[in-house]
Figure 1: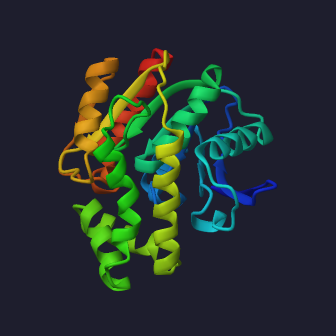
Figure 2 (figure 1 turned 45 degrees about the horizontal axis):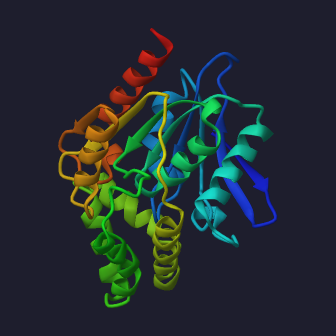
Length: 268
């Protein structure tokens, strides 16, 4: 993967690209979750780069893209569009993990003609009908509650809550390591607060696949995914022996599910 950068007026956005030698190869864009970075998908990029063009990125406020002003999912979507334009890539298949599903859905809402499919990986839907007022209040309370934990307890608790395997736990701890407790809480506060403000009703006509860890107990992710599947008719597949970080806990099944989804799109 080649490390690259997009210069914006809001800050520098770093991304990684593996371009397939076949210009007709499909492009997969992987977008990571809250307090993580692009390396969250290392087991996916290594698998898919042989057959597809692959893009991963550190979304604003995260990883190397930490120094960033005016965070919003709209701005993230605009940044992703600029990255793709910079690389001459038009059509993409989006894979958004947890919070990474929000800039993915925003991009798809703004640029439906550029999206061939969306894999919703342990994420939740845009849509006002899914979230009660108490749900929205809970989202706003996550960051304040995090202040009650010591630095060490916060990190360990976060890593343990999203993982079922040693790999996922240590990967999450590794991604948290560069940041102070204050920076981690800032990421939570802004990300959840912006979601409450930007959430809206959307409808996608391209294929969507929802993947959910069997043991995902993060918030109400499981309930939201089930409701999303029922309302929109999107297939919901359970990732066995996996928690919220399912692509780390069970990369073999996640990779297989994504590959099968893409093959269905292109008719292989």
